[in-house]
Amino acid sequence: MGEFGDRRGGSGGGFRGGSGGGGRDFGPREMHKATCSDCGAECEVPFKPTEGKPVYCRECYRNRKPRF
Ligand SMILES: [Zn+2]
Image (cartoon, rainbow, N blue to C red; front, top):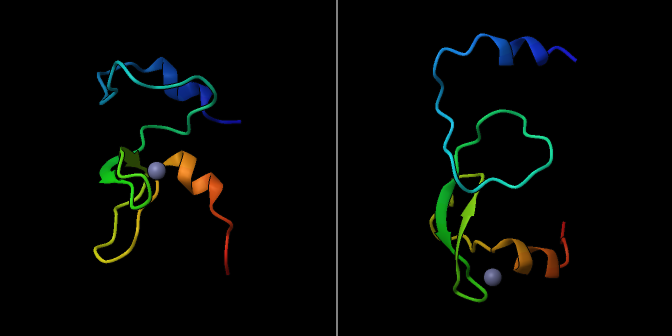
């Protein structure tokens, strides 16, 4: 619990207004646009999509069974 001090010193910041659901955010996260390999919908992933690797939107990702 040391994140509170961060909100006080408001000296700009790179916050994007607009989309952003509620919940807790652990700071600004870089989102990368990608196309879902399953349904083909445009989506944003918090990681850099790797070329050659399939990217899934949240819904498809949840539908998929984790395989390790
Ligand atoms: Zn999808």
